[in-house]
Amino acid sequence: MNDEILTLKEVAEYLKLAEKTAYRLAQKGKLPGFKVGGSWRFKREDIESWIEQQKNKAGTK
Image (cartoon, rainbow, N blue to C red; front, side, top):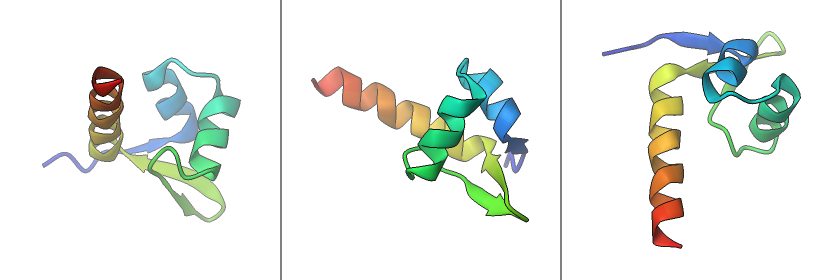
């Protein structure tokens, strides 16, 4: 089981997004994350599941 926790910057790099875009998606609840002391954190496995969901949505359109 992979419990790796990523920062906003790491998630932005992983998804090849600007940090502002990743922040905005997290704030709107479109990117699965949580706040610790006011800073966004993300579980790698949640991000990978989210990617799969996005791929499935794209395939059904």
